[in-house]
Image (cartoon, rainbow, N blue to C red; front, side, top):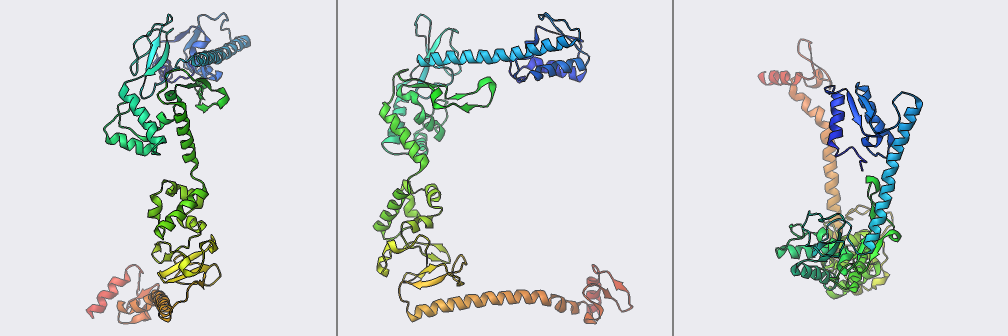
Length: 457
């Protein structure tokens, strides 16, 4: 069915010759209207005919019963023929789909690659089993049907191993692919294993003996779209299974659970367990748990600090960033009494304070937001003096830098201008300058001249 002009080199060459004006013919013989193409947009075939007629090339239909007499009936008949050609494609597509669904329900494969560990085997009309087809080969006869059989024993063993690692060992697709690559194994295309190749095996029901057809559709060469599950065609005993149904269902449940991510309760339990075991918490310790992946934490809590705060752990900050987390029990406060929106600033291990959002500016806070202190422990006088001195020195340094910066801007004109001549600002008003004879210098050239005269004198 010619639904697109793409791939029709003959028709494209004909249109190109006609448009270039170098055509060595003045008439095009067309069998019938549908030979332009069974385009779903009937104006497309009319467009190509118009290109020929516009270039002075006559178009004659050989098998049509109407005559080109230029009457409205002639134009109407051609339009009806184009509609009939497009409708023929739609009806034929429906018939082919129904036949494919019927053969899929009988356990026959309907095109495409078989997958790793499987081979295509054609079966004749009399039930004769023919040799397995290699990659790229077509079935010997159009009336043959294709079934799937197990491939080499080594490939079957790898498929079963992939499911075992995924379900029993709780490995990820990436981990399994890396392990297979490290062993020098190749996939069905002769390439090293990657994550996509492992994923195709883990989601394909053929490995548990089931063939599923009509999951997607591309009717009339349109965009591929997914069909609802009620339109899928299943054959549960199409071939001998490599793995049992329970293992396959377990793999799908694990994949769905990983896609959704762990729940907040499970993640918080893991965080509290790590904190209880190590008496501290950090991102490095959390990365050792598959449940506490960085993507999952960001999805559930927005940040690592948000996760620790939701778990009831106090956060420690310094000017360098987030460090570890200290238990609250030595400080006389239970972990549950810390709210999820509270933060903790710690300059020393014994110098800890919880911060509540009240409008008091504190220079040491790394995010420079208004906070106030509510002490959990009493600080010694030395610690208080150290913090006060640090804050005072830092603020003094910042103020000094700002004053120097502003002073350099203000004094730049007054300090530099006397260097340009012996007469100081008497001859320079910030925009213009005059020499000794009263001639005005251009503002882009006076500096070099006055500097030269100054040092010469």
